[in-house]
Image (cartoon, rainbow, N blue to C red; front, side):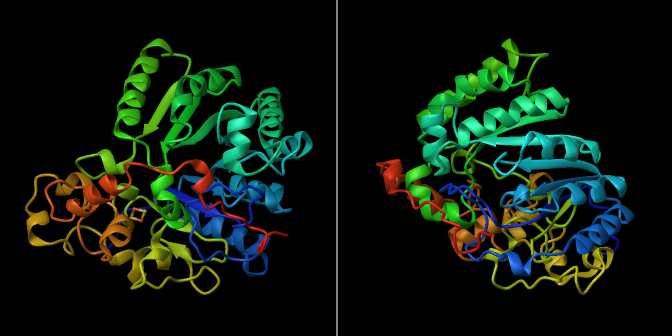
Amino acid sequence: MANPPAPIAMLAELTHRCPLSCPYCSNPLQLAGREAELTTEDWERVFRQAAEIGVLQVHLSGGEPASRRDLEALVGAACDAGLYTNLITSGIGLTPDRLQAIADRGLDHIQLSVQGTTAISADRVGGYRGGFDRKMLMAEAIHRIGLALTLNVVMHRHNLEELPEVFDLAERLGARRVEIACVQFQGWALKNRATLQPTRQQVDRAKALVAEARTTRAGRLVIDFVPPDYYSDLPKACMGGWGTTGLNVSPDGQVLPCHAAQTIPSLTFSNVRDRDLGWIWANDPAFNAFRATDWLPEACRACDRVGVDFGGCRCQAMAILGDASLPDPVCRRTPGRAALDAALVAEGNAPGLDAAIFRRMGAIAG
Ligand code: FES
């Protein structure tokens, strides 16, 4: 595509290191170790280049960004570049003093994740004893400092029943927004799909509860809800369309069109150590591979939804059908849907959480 539109958002994955062990981790199977991570100076350059090509907001993510000792400097660099800066954190590794320092550098917003609404349920999923209590202390500090807070909860078969308590917790912590994202089966999470996939009954109930809460809590709490893809009939426009609105930079500097793009073996990626971000956005073959809709099968190009979903998620087509150039198998208008339905039937009697494979990061922690 000649002259693609400017990207709006950049996900800066500062590190893959993480103290938690969530079985729904969507990071790739192959993680970048600490020694491979971009330096502070690399990130400063990337933030400046991002602003130059039109990026408005940066999401500092991981792994756990607080695992980086230079997080305060990185926040400052992103803010100094003129980017609206959001920190996505588990809260583990932060202290009230670090939070204050980050706020002083200009952080605009913080997104705090919890794995449940009680210490018992949350610490079990996160695989980190005492984690929930530490998160609550961080939430108090965030409130005291006056940072804008979104509470983020990944929901699945084993915690979706806690949804009403999630709304209560968000309000109690002073969050203006709660993001409830049902687990997306990318990366490590795919190993645990049979265990984590919610039932259709759970999803229907969750949708009803969200609709009710949006009415009863209007004006106090904004609720974002991402339902599980597998129970949808039509795909969503993943990333707003490949190479149209956003880009990700991995801890070791690879520039990705989406979070899970490394699962597509036919793609190779440019690195910010070698190339300018503006060149990569406009010219990199990985970004151009699925831009616009010319690459889609003819039936999809003629579909009335092609300008709505752009063929859906490339990584889901890869994960389910083994071919990233096929339409997203969520789409009931395509033959690939049968594979998704078969997976749902096969996973009807899901094993308990004890059967989940937790992600231990010891090998790359440090
Ligand atoms: Fe890669 Fe959807 S996650 S296109």
